[in-house]
Length: 345
Picture 1 (cartoon, rainbow, N blue to C red):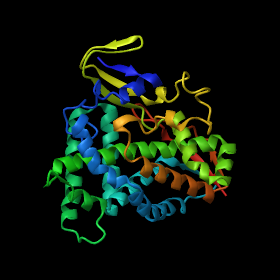
Picture 2: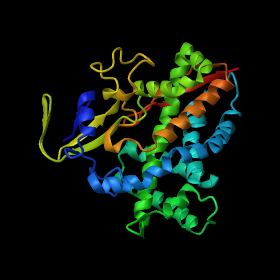
Picture 3: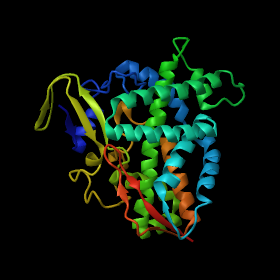
Picture 4: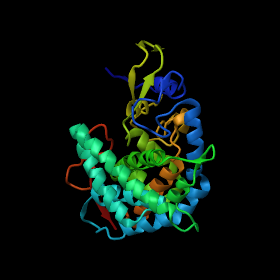
C-alpha cells in the first residue's frame, strides 16, 4: 500500500532526511539516484562534473544549431502540434547531441520512447522488461564505439567510459544505469517542460511580450511556469524506520510518493499558488528537487529550456492557442499529450 507526501513542508523534510526517507525503492540498479549515503555521494561526485559550467557553456553553440533546425521550418499561421513537432524531437536531439551520439540514435530513441510510453500506460511489465534490455543494448553499442574513438575532444560518452572508481573503470551496467537516468528521465521531463512553457505563454500574451522585451527574466520565468505546471509529477521514497510527519505516521519500509505538483502549489507556502509571479522566493521552488538528491543537471536543463523559449519568442511575434483543444498527458506524466499552437509573424 502506498502513501503520498503532498505538503511542501513534508516533502522538504523527506528530501533533507535521507536517513529516514531512502531513495532505494527498486530492486534494479539505479546509479546514483537509487543510492543513499556514502555510496550515493561517491557516484554523485563522479557525475557532477559532466554538468559543470564549462560543459554547459561548451554545449551552447551546438544546442543553438539544433534549435534553429527545428523552428526555422515551422509554418507561420498554421496549427502545429507542439509535442510531436517540437517538444519530443527537441528533447531527443538535445540529449543525443550532448552525449555525442549520431543522428540515427535520435531516431532509435524516439521509437524506443514511444514504445516505453505505451507499455508504461498499459502497465505491461513483460514489455517494459524487454524495452529495458533494448535500451541497454542501444547504450552499450554507443559505449563500445566510444572506447575505440579518437582521444581528441572526447564526447560525454567517451568521458564516461574513462571514469574510474578506486582505480577501476565502472562496469558497463553502471554506465548504462547512469545514462538511463540522464536519458529516460530527461527526455520525458524536458519534452513535457517545453510543451508546458509554450502552452503557458500562448495563454498569457502579456507575459509572453514582457519576456520578449526582457529575455534576462527567462530563467526565473521558466522555473515559475514549471512550478505551476510540473513536468514530473512523482518520485518515490522508502521509510527506513517508523516516521511521523504532523498528523501522518508510517511504518518502516513504507513506499511514499512525493507529489511535486501538490508540493509546489501548496497554498500554505505559495500565496495564490496558481498565479504566475517573479517575486517568489526561488529557494521554495522544488522543480529540481532539494537536498542531496537534487537534480545535478539543472544548469543544462535550464539552458536548453531558455534557449528554445528565447528562439521561439524571437522568431514569432505571437504564440497563440489554436482552435483544436489541447489534451493533457496522463499521469504519471505531466504537461500535454497534444498541444496545438499558432506561431504568427
